[in-house]
Length: 574
Image 1 (tube, one colour):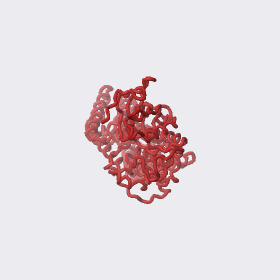
Image 2 (tube, one colour; image 1 turned 90 degrees about the vertical axis):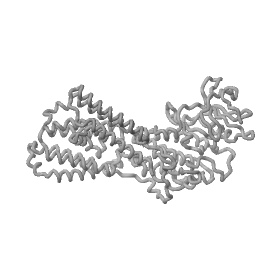
Image 3 (tube, one colour; image 1 turned 60 degrees about the horizontal axis):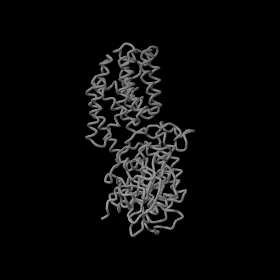
Image 4 (cartoon, rainbow, N blue to C red; image 1 turned 45 degrees about the vertical axis):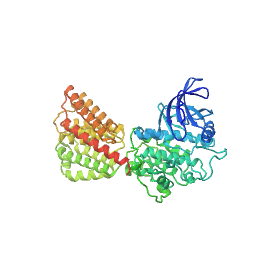
């Protein structure tokens, strides 16, 4: 049995201090370079029959490379017992560890992808094919450096050197099967297209939470290699179409149809402004939860499909939108449930306005009186469900003109205009603040921040949370329970609106839908804090506390738990 080398001085200058990790190919140590007084990483590979071809190959490959996206090799050498590879010490975690912890946002994944594209382009230009790109071989430093330093590719132990003698015979299979390109798995000669495939699969997994190739065993995984993979857009319809199309193309079983690493990098860079910077978007499921995808023919045009969001997203194909629709601001996906809820909310709002406020209209009062509130509500609700933004704006303008009365018109404008300004391109959410007064009538106003907290982005959640309280403050002015508009500008209204906005913004960050016990504790603290803070601010600033703050907060907790569980189930594709 080999003696533990901790504390040993190797290559006459590197003191082995602490084991960092071990695998089938050597052990990595934290070491101290006593000559240059700096920490380094030392991979110690025991000699097998006096030689270590893999270690020598890694040294030869890494010696050609000098790039911030590749772990730098300082020195290679050997003694009577082992071969040593001395490299820079990267303090951080692997991409795989970050995925399992749920600490990556879509923006993180996209930026890491750009860095890895740059690293692989550098390697390929110098005749080095990595052949083992996988999450465990990507280090993400704790402190990101400039440029490609945001992620570093490591372990070139099975790299192929274009101008070196073959170290493996044709037909030999080396690499990690779950990330291996079909031609590599078949033992054919690999090119840079194999690295492109592996990188695309790594990014696909990081964005979707599942690797569709991996199965419960090596044999089952091998049977999936080369099969048609489900388009990424099928799992993440909220991602930019151009990004999904580029990854789908790079995962083509035919290396000639994958495009280039430059193509993938361009799509990743173009997608940066349109993806979320919120950790925990997906939940990386274990092997047993990975869906078994059946091979099925996938047409090239299907791989490059552009999902359309009707009137919300058609504008992205307008001039200036770019070939992938990336030239404009990112738009929230318009789903069928979102359309239905938006239509119902708009219908309820218009029906209430026409039935309760027609008595106050001036010049057009008689005309308004002739309108059946139920028919008008149904018409507006259906229109908003079909064309959320356009119909909402038309209905708003029509309502303002029809009401006519100065006080009521001003109140409606104060309620509606901020929604359009602060949640600009998300028509299905424009009716959501109307839920706050409705919940107040039921004595459950405190539940509203949980509803606002289901929007996808932090700015949207914050805006909708604050606007819900704003509508709640305006409602008494409309019903004459509060006679003047000055009351809505009170410090208490602004403070409570800010509180509700903050509560909605942080809710999904606290309640992640992964561990029920943790979520219950988090939502309990969140609901109790919301209720206590609402009451304290109202008391301190002499403001009437909304009805049902405590029971509403309890309901909010239930809503948050249910929504988190639903999101978690959606991210884990069964």
